[in-house]
Length: 84
Image 1 (cartoon, rainbow, N blue to C red):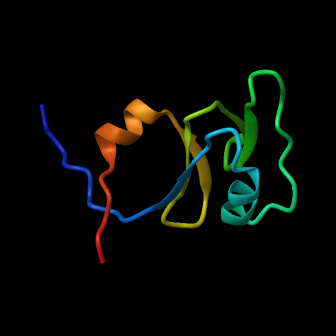
Image 2 (image 1 turned 90 degrees about the vertical axis):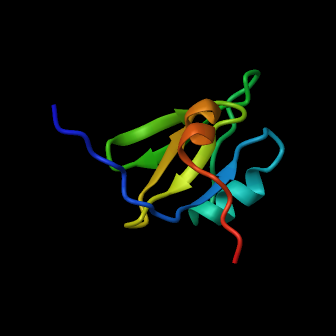
């Protein structure tokens, strides 16, 4: 069976920690994001519609500017910090 290697892509991301809604709004360029209590989850508009981001999920801006949430364990397996 053919195998493929994912191309290296640099992305921007911010982690939702429950207290950084201003940072999330600034990152997503959305004027207002509701925080749903008591679980403190948010919804992120994606190409597939609104997706729920729970605490500790990462919000990623893709290569075409699209947004999507990513679970921490998947993020850790897929991405590593970039140093300039």
